[in-house]
Length: 454
Image 1 (cartoon, rainbow, N blue to C red):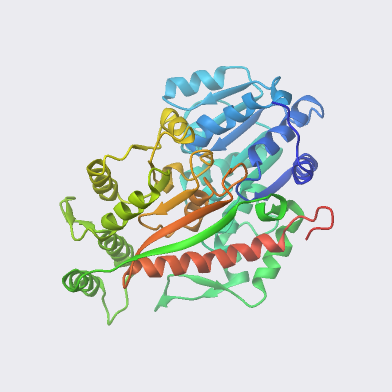
Image 2 (cartoon, rainbow, N blue to C red):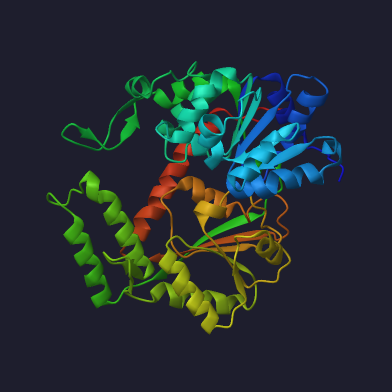
C-alpha cells in the first residue's frame, strides 16, 4: 500500500530525524508506528545515521503491529526485520540474524542486556509505550539505563506519558536524555517540583506538584518533546461516555460495608500495607465476587452480570468489546454469555482478532493489561463496555482507543461503564477523570504547532 502521510505525520517524521533524543507523544490513532518506521527507514537508508535498530514494545504490539506495519507499506519493503520473542532459543536465533530492525517485547530487556551474551551494539533504540518504563525501580528500567550511554539515538513513543501524574515523567526522561532535563536522581526531582500530599508521620504515600512546578517541568522537556491530539488532526468519531448503574440489595451492601470496615484501620485511615488489599477486595465485591484466603471465588451478587445480559440483548447482535479485570469476572461472564448462546471469544490470539475485525463475534473479551496497547480493533465494532474499571488511566485510555481511533467507520463510539453505585466503582471513575486532567495539561503544554495550530 502506498503511504500518503498527513501533514502532522510528515512533521513528526522530520522531528524524529532531526532530534537524536525525542519524546513523541502521539494520541491514539495518529499512526505512531508508521511515522516512526518511516523516520527509521530514512535514517537507515538515506541519511545513514542509524545502522542497527532495536524496538522495544508490549508483546502483542511487538508480535503483530510492528511487523504488520512493515509489511503493509510499499516504501518500507526494503527494510529487513527480525522478531525476537518466544523461547530463549528463538530469541537468540532472531538476534543472530542480519536485519535492519530487531523487535522484542519489553519483558526481554533485562535478559537481552544482562543474560543473553549478545553484545548490545544497537545505535538506535525505540521504546514503544515509553510509559511502561515509568517505574525507576523496575529491572527493565535499570537494565536499559546501564546501556543508555552506548545508544546514539533514543525515541520514546506513547500516548499516555503521565497517566498517574507528573511523577511518572522522571524515569521516562531519565532514559531518554540521561537526566539532562529532569535530573539524574528521583529524590532531587521530588524535592524540586513536589511536596508531600498524603502521609502518615514520616511515611509519604503521595506527592503533589509545588505551585508553578507543572509549567517548569513542561518547559524543561519541551525542546525534545512533541505532542499531538487525534481530535486536532483527524476526523474522529464522536465519543459518547455513559454509565449503566446497578444497585446492591440491602444485604449485599451490608456485606460490602462490613468488608470495608474490617480492613480500615486507625479511625478510617488505611495503612499502606492494607490499602492495596482493600481496594482490590472492594473492587471485586463491586463486580460481584471475591477471592477468599484460599483463592476460591465466592459469588456475592450478580448485578453486573444482569446488566451485561441486558446490554447484550439490547445490542441485538451488534458487537461489544467487553473489558474485564479479575479472572473470576471472566469466568462468570463466560458462564452468562454461554447461557445467552452469544458468540464470543477472548481477544488473545491473531485468529480471534481477525474474527472480531470481520464482525463474526457478538462479544470480544479483552483484558486491559494484556491487550490495551496497539491493537487495531476498530473494524469489528464501535461499542466498548467496562465490566470492571482499572485504576490505571493509561490502560483505560489505551483500551478505549482500540475502537475510538482513526479508521473507525461508525460516526459514534459508545463507551459504557457498568457502575455499582455506593461502591469503590464511583471513586475509581472519578480518579480516572482527575488523572486525565493532569495528563491533558502536559499534552497541551508541549503540543506541536503545525500550520498555525497550537
